[in-house]
Image 1 (cartoon, rainbow over the protein chains, first blue to last red):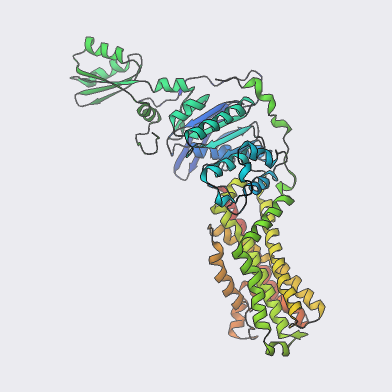
Image 2 (image 1 turned 180 degrees about the horizontal axis):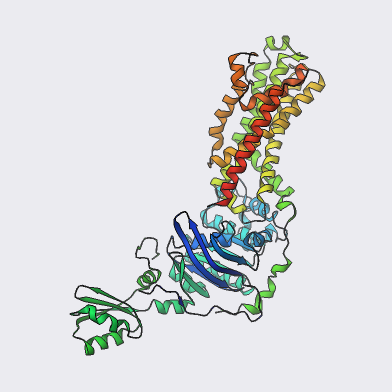
Length: 319
Length: 267
């Protein structure tokens, strides 16, 4: 099993020397004895759409909270558009859309937006963002009477008020239907074209692959892989070769040395080789060893994802 | 991967400003007031109930005829009920933070430029406005029903002291709001306030020097109740009233600040 960080794509270098939208250096966060974040190095350039992918409890939310200035790192440093997170928030440069809560039930949709707008020095008008979010028609409705989908649109409208340079989304499309998901992402993509950086947390590999320029896999408080969707998928495209082999233990070193092999496991007489190149492993086993009963099985995306994130608890790992 | 660099010009972080006064503004204040007026429970308990209590109790002929200081007992009851209304209103206003925390609105606000101090100022202003409404309601009804009798300056002084002193209870409400994150914190605080009002001497007069009086002097409403009625009797205010009010104020502010710092640290 690979536990070292796999740097696939190089972090994009900005030739203009503009400040990164998000920059984390050696960031850790402890809650008592729990090490939620264990040293994250990360640089996101303006205009990137980045997915934070990982199982629940991987440290996604903790990291996002630090970027939002809701909590401070135990060690390491962090900047948003070259500013302290709170400074960036005070200038309306950062906005976030949470999955639940964050709304007052006894305000109308429009009042909620006007209230929020009044807090920023530079802001778009309430009518503008209501129209953009497609909720002008329910402007006078009390939030308590809005459906879950309408409330999510309202949160989105609020986030767009200050025309933020960085937008953070926590599981943004949970509960949306296919059509809603598609139109949501098309509007996110068009905003990214204007230079808005988008960082979204998800535990759906599909969603990350479809909509992000870059996927950052996070597990147990560390970045375990960082690359484009296709690069991450190639990581997940491996197969498992199983064979019955006497003295399997002695063969592990040689097997691990074959190009493409991720890990080798021995269980009794059986050896399990996780590899990106199953042909090479099979050829080796058949020609160089006394292996028999060879089976080759495709490693599912989810299984690969789990092995990569080191999380064998399928609970909360998506579908 | 898209080429982000060429398009960054459309959002220029360096042009963005920080709002003055930590984000404090009239629009939010207006919306907050509209919001509290929409809350029927709060309106009934802070505006209607003190007025009703006054009308029911003070119209008793015994109280209109009996003298109390420079006025009658009905005047004494009027000041007491105005104080009760102001105290309840300020507590409700402060305790709104409990609902806002339970709903995640406080967290939402922390993603805006609004500073925690500005937030507390807004909550206090809303609490004081509600308190003013309550004091005015009791006093206006008091004038219209023509049962209370006291010199004009006593009317005014009593109302002003009841209102201004109620700021102590907006701090109490804030403290409780941070302590009890619930959407219905006033269901807990309502009976507590009624009990404190009774022991503090707002429901019935407490005999000076009695055991109850000694206990009462340690409770938070005692100081304000006596200070608000002091213009009716004249003379100097007792030091114990002022010490009581200031002491509880300090305690509530310290408690609210302590809970608030815990809340914003989110460790």
